[in-house]
Structure formats: C-alpha cells, structure tokens
Image 1 (cartoon, rainbow, N blue to C red):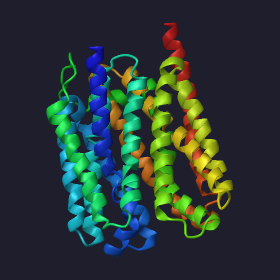
Image 2: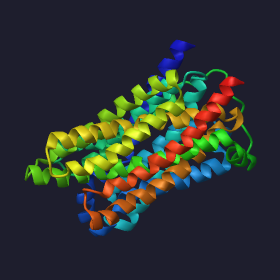
Image 3: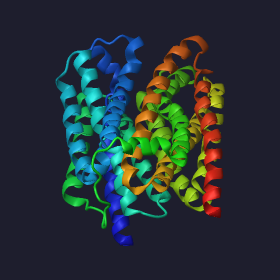
Length: 399
C-alpha cells in the first residue's frame, strides 16, 4: 500500500505539473497576444485574470453540484486535462480578443477539474500524514504554472504559438496518464448523491472555515505575486542593467516562481507534518508578508539582491498552500471532502481576480517600490485566522 501510494503520488504530481502549464501559457506571451488581438495595455491584467475567472466559475458549479464527491475523481481529472488541452490549443486559431479571452475562461473552468480533484485523489491515497504528499503535489503545480517561463527562455525567438502548442501537448500527456496509468485508490469512499447539504456542511464547520479564511488571505497574495513579479523584475532590471536579455528575465521568473516555490512546498510539507499545519502556515505567511513589503526597496538596486528577495518570497508565498488543503481534508467529514476543497479554491481564486487587477491600478499611483505592500494584507489576516485554527487543533489533540 505504501509503495503504491508513493507511486500514485509520482504520477499525480507529474500529471499536475503537465496540466497546470495551461494556466500561464498565454500570460507569458501577453506582449505578442496584445498585438495579435489588439488589446490595450490597460486591459492586460484581464488576460491574466481570465483563467482565474474561469476557475472560479468551474469551481463554483463543481462544489454546488458536489461533482468531486459524486463521480470518479480520476476520470474527472483525465477528461478535464484533455478538454483543457483542446481549449488552449484553439488559441493559435484566434485573431481577436473576445474569442481569445473566452477560450482562456473556458480553460480556467476546465482546470477546476484538475487541481482540486488532484488533491481529492491524493487524500484518498494518503489518509494520514498527507502534508508532505500534498506539498509535493503543490510543488508540481508551482513548477507547472511557471513552466511556460522556462519554455519561453529557450524559444523566445520562435513564434508565440510554440508555447501554446507545448503546453497543450503536456496537458494531453496528463490526460493520458490519468486515463491509462494512474490507478484508483484502494477502498475509495462511496460516491455521494447531489445535495445542497454538502455546501451547508462546509460552511457550518468551524475548523474547515477557519482553514478557509487562512487560505483566502494566502490567495490574496499568491497569484498577484506570480502574475506581476516578472513585470517587476523587467522594470527593475532595466534600470540596473539596460537592455537586459529577455531570457534572463524569463529565467529569473522561473527560478523565483517555479524552483524556489517547488522547494518551499516540499519543505513546508515536511515541517507541517512534524510541527502542525497552523504553525507552518503562520510562519510562511509572516515571511511572505515581510517580503511583499521589502522587495520594493530593492527596485532598481542590485540585481542579485532583488533576486534573493524574490526567491525567498517565491518560496514562502507557496510553502503553506498545500497545508490549507491538507487541513481541510483532515477536518472535513469524508462525505464532503471533495466539495469542501473545491469550495475553498472557488472563493480563493475569486479573491485572486481582485488582487491581480488591483496591482496595475495601484502601481500607477505609488510605483513598483510600494505596490506589492498591499499584498501583505492577505497574509496578516490569514495569520489571525490560523492562530484561531491552532487553538482548535490544540483542543482536538487534548480530546
């Protein structure tokens, strides 16, 4: 069983890495798409926000209908990855913003059947001590999300369609693994029938909602950082080193988001299984809040100082992400775990739409030096919530 669990984790992690390359596949080539689709620079944020918008829509209907708890999660995952690859690939045929944004929204809707469903599958394979397992899964998500930066680093001189094709091929590989290689977890829970009580159970559960509130604060910061740190690095490096090669910015973004974030997820999972979910999340959010404030002071200064802060931020901003999901999967009753996870992510990604679009607006008034400071609000509120969750954890242990 143990060997089978880790084998399943390897396949699930690799599948998520491949499928989540769809998330930023269009964002990293935004300059080219803005020209092709005739998008004004003031609307660039909506290109990045279109996938989270779709994800929120998909997650809402998934949690409302209890899809994750009614159907085989492995099959949902495989079908979602396949459809995501198709919608993403269709971008190469589009020449206007309306259909392009629509396809990105559809991609986001489909990805609601990938990420939360993968967490549900993993919780079935790891009924206990799942912190490290889910940490590895989120590390795969982080690497997958940053993968288009890696592709662009080597092929920036080629047509933008190459990035789209590569990400779609990876998603198809993910669908193949989910269909033909990944196995169902032994002793899966019975499938639930549709009931609005699943949502009401989530909302009425105090420990689940405390973990959710912590996650919401975390999400206020996460995707806004992932979306805008490449633009920050570009603007900062152009002052310190004019005519900075684009591959260096892409590499810096990939390291800050993907490599540092992946390492942070694994370390966070190890620590959380030993010291507790709440302790890890509190420390991570404290460090990320500090980084969101201090990185502005490095703007236009030493490139290496900027990179060091961005890597620490990239590591801490995601190191706790898996533990909110792990906490919910542990305190939620078995019959609504999938719905609870999807609900958590639905609201969390709705929040990201606000913070992603707020950054460029605030940046026009305060500049890159101060704009990321507003992201510290989320972790601070998240810390307060997880301190309350910590007291609940302690009470449960006492019982």
